[in-house]
Image (cartoon, rainbow, N blue to C red; front, side, top):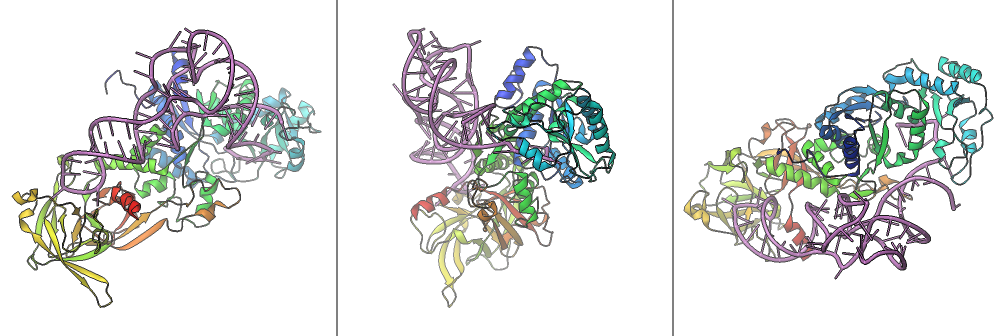
Length: 561
RNA sequence: UGGGACGUCGCCAAGUUGGUUAAGGCACGGGGUUUUGAUCCCCGCAUUCGCAGGUUCGAAUCCUGCCGUCCCAGCCA
């Protein structure tokens, strides 16, 4: 990289702000954190946050912590912690420290005591109903709890009893004493500790009281010397509370919260609540179903870390809500794989074709480039035989003028081979297409002088004798609506696209593809990018179509109808 | 009807201490190369910055008013 080029992507308001702060000497280094709650798998929206949080210190100097925001044992599980670690690493990021909000439970408890001692927190034993009623509404101020002004000594005693375990869930809560008439509802004496007799994945049964998000997050930031605490827009209203707590507590540093707009993508859902439902109710096969917008799902589908990171860098970081077309993500995959994926031939929906002037029982091994633009990627040999399969879509008995593939009496080139002419269309008694009889023009073999002869179309093929049977899974958008979660009248699962998965059982692959391992990727020429699925075995390969190639013909065909 | 935020081309998005013709990407349209209708390469694509006024020699950038959208009344995060 040339030295005067900026280290990373496009400018955004957070980057600009940090650059100015650095110029003004406010910081020596930038420390961020990625703070997932381990109550589900990470999705593409988290990827946006991950890329932002990790790239800022990379650019300006500093580091990023991975922090599990584990303050609610009712929803959090170890398996999610493991999955999150794996996904962040897979995206290509290394955190400086792995932290947990639960590491700070003792300190947080002392902070709570500090608030109590300063008359800034009190124990309230009213039930949730009463607390809610007293909170007021958006337009009316709240009213004080009858316990709001009890003594420091009594509050300490009560809070200690909360911790001791003698009180049942919901018996009382600790509240910050701020302002019941604040226009910002978060400031109306928010609950900062609640009783939850529930084992925690990390602290076991050491605690039966747990701090709320608001009481844990900012303080954790301060304890970790986080300089910039980046979060999504819905926390804007929490910032005054975040700041209030930092100002009133003896924390070791002064972090700042900055909010940016969360990512939305059309034809899918990006909230953990909804994704969890898709998994729990069996609408998908799991968190890593290739149709899921989760990191694990995208990975299984065939997305690369680069494609996801490039996508995140290109969509930008702003404060305005936006929805990105799913096709944008796909485009980045195509860009990445176009440059790197070895080319292969595979027939998804086979149609038998007999080369009548090709010697019976013989195999001719033809050279094929692994990548047309990158000779470095080498060549391979593909077997040609008298009987081959071509794609059903590549033959039309009654073809429109613009159809450049095979038709009765027409010519087409077989990729990496020669030009053929369709002489005869064989049908069964019911009139169904059975096979095609074609003759080859041997002079037009690749490498021969006659190879220069041009025909309009080139189609792919696989030797019937050598081809490998495979299952191929094709994926479409998970939902039928651009914004399935935006309809308040209807449950979002009603908008699921029942045709989002298509399984092809009769696909035929070029030999060698049975050796492909999970993690490899290929372009099946003229079709798209495909990856082996973990469900496959060498004797019974399974491939996922990650994304199709751009298909101008399909677009044209649609217009012709 | 309270508070917080946002509104620049079909989708994203630079630009905001006011100063030449409003970046870039995607999409779209046109053309070229091509044994992938892929890739690649050219060209085109906002007299206009939610609307209406105002300040100014000059405004997307400042002021006023209005309109629209999103978030907030969990002992979730």
